[in-house]
Length: 211
Length: 147
Image (cartoon, rainbow over all chains, first blue to last red; front, side, top):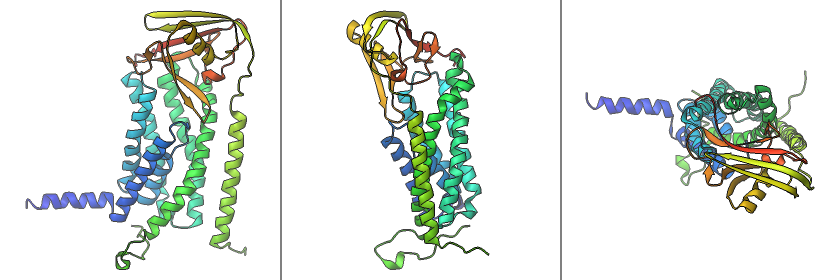
C-alpha cells in the first residue's frame, strides 16, 4: 500500500504537467519569458511574458496555465523591485497582485480558446487578434493597481495615470504584435509536430493529441 | 459561394496585415514620444532636493541644462553629490534611482519623485522642460497610505 502513495503523486504530476513534449514546451515557454525579460529590460513593455502566458494557456493548458506566468513573474518582479525598490512591502504586494492576476487572466483566456488552436494560419491570427484587447485590458488593470498603490498617495488622479499609460500601452501592443505571431507560429509547430531526433523510430509523426 | 484561400495565401495576407499594423503602431508611438527638449538657456531656475533629514538648495542664474533631470545632474556636479539613474530606450527616458547617497532601494515606502512649479512629473524627468524662474523639487517621498 505504501507504494501507492508515490504512484498516485506521480499520476497527479503527470496529469498536471502532461506528457514529455508538453513538459519540454512548458519549460521552453518559461525560458522564453525569463530570457525576454532579462534581454529587454531597457525597453519598457517590450516583453515576452505575455506571449508565453497566452501560449501556455492556449497550447499546453493543465498546470502550465499557472506555472509559466508565475515562474516568469518571480524573475520579473524580483528584477522590477530591485530597480524600483524602496516601496513598502504592502505597496509591492499590492502592485504584484495586479500584475500576477492580470497574467493569470491572460492565461485563462488562452485556455478558453485552446480547443480552437491548431497549427494553422487561422490559429496564429486568432491568437494575435485576441492578444491586442488582452494587452490593453492587462495594461488598464495594472495601471489601476499602480495608481492605487503607487501614485494615488501623491495626489495623481486616475485620469492622469491612464493618460500617462497610453504610450506604454502602445509599446505593449507593439510587443504583442511582434512576439505572438513569432513565438505563436514556432510553438504551434513544435506542439503539433515536435522536433526531429537522431533516430527516426523515436520521432512521432503524429500531431499531439488535444485531450 | 466565395473561394477559400489556401494556407499559403492566408499566411501571406496575415504577414502583410501584421507588418502593416506593426509599422503603423510604431509610427504612432514615435508621434506620441514627448518631444526632445530643445537646447536653450534658462535663467533663475531654483532646485530643491528634499532627502531624508537633509535638504539641498541650488539656483542656476543661467544654464543650458533646461530639464528637471539635467538641472539635477548640474547641481550634483557643482555641489559635489552623486546622482544615479537608469536610462531607458523605449520609451526614451531617465529614471533617477539615487541622489546624494539616498537610493530608491532604501527604507520602506520611499522613492525619488519630482515636481515642476508644484505639478507632479508625469513624463520622464529628462523630458520635463524648464522655463525661466521655474521651481524644481525632487523629493524622497513616502506614500501616505501607510504602505
